[in-house]
Length: 199
Image (tube, rainbow, N blue to C red):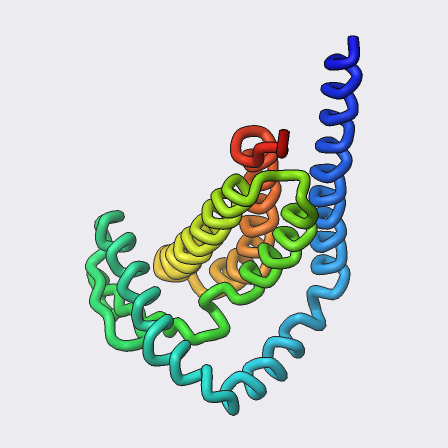
């Protein structure tokens, strides 16, 4: 009888923590959609700030070229003739080559920020073992990284096949919904299969 009571309180507390995380995700989505027109202005301001920081060199010289090569590999696997320079992906196969520039602002810092906020909420406290929290964080970080890579691939693929206007819609709205959708899936998976409560 005592075990049953303990088990039920355990489940209720677990549900409340996961509920807080999902509520936070939903609020982020609502706020982003409400203030979406302001995001482009915010991105421009942030771009100017980051360009003046020393860390910008590392982003421009290391992270961007690495992501450009990954995007090119995936596009090549999809059957697209592709070449790369440091920050450009060049798609050929038609009369004129299609050139897509990947700048630091495209690499997915927003989704990293969203993941960090939800991780802070979802993994706080000592309810779960440190090892399971580390596993969940690692899965979330790697998943967020790959979602960003696939998002870039999709935008370039759409721009190449359907034009700039369609790609802009996918870039602005589809990318946001993809990241939020990934975070919902990740937290469901983590609370169901990864996070282990302390005994």
